[in-house]
Structures are given as structure tokens and as C-alpha cells.
Length: 123
Image (cartoon, rainbow, N blue to C red; front, side, top):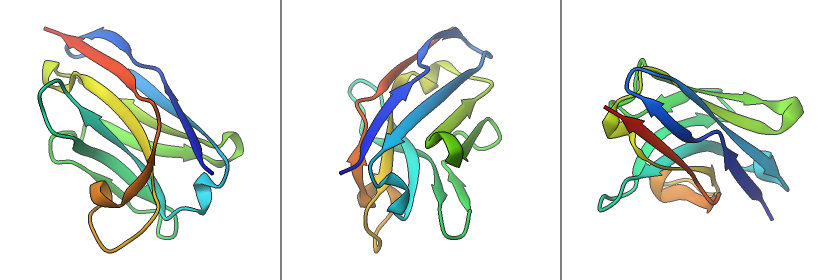
């Protein structure tokens, strides 16, 4: 089984930066890829970013393009999300997830989630 543990969340002022980390164990990197989703109170889950293992392609939600960067450190079995120019609307619980199937969207095909880390951006 795959285990994902997020860290790096916290409280930051608008315009600031945070880097989220996702430590992976098990067969995480045998999946099709990994990414990040977020959920704010009262809102639906939202795709944030993802990386496809085979192609190396990266994907971002329009709302975070140019501000967030997803990356992977194979030696540390860790996926990162560098978050710059943070906005209050970025406030949410951020989850790391592994894509376990194909045929749908990244969000629908994520089959394994971490426990989440809270990101709060103050205005």
C-alpha cells in the first residue's frame, strides 16, 4: 500500500510563500503520477497541481499557474509544492494524492490521499 504524509502548512500573510512536502512510502512511485488537491470549508475539492511520471509533464489549475510549482525528489521519495504570491483564496487543507488509474481527470483518478495540511493566508 501507499502512504502519503503532508507537511509544511501554516499561517502566512498574503504575498508570502510556503513549501509543502509529501513524504511517500510503499509503491507510490509505481503510480501514474502524483499531485496536490485542496479543499476549503464549504467548497468542493479542487485540483491544484500534478506531475506525470512517464512524461514528466506538469499540470496546474488556472488559479495557481505562475505562482505554484510542483516538483519531485526521487532520492527522498518526496513531492513538493512551492507556493508563492499566496492569496487569501488559497486558504484550504492541502492533500497530496497518487493517481492510481487513468481514463478520467486527475482529480477523479486520484486513488490514494494523505491526511492533509492546513494552509491559511491572511489578508
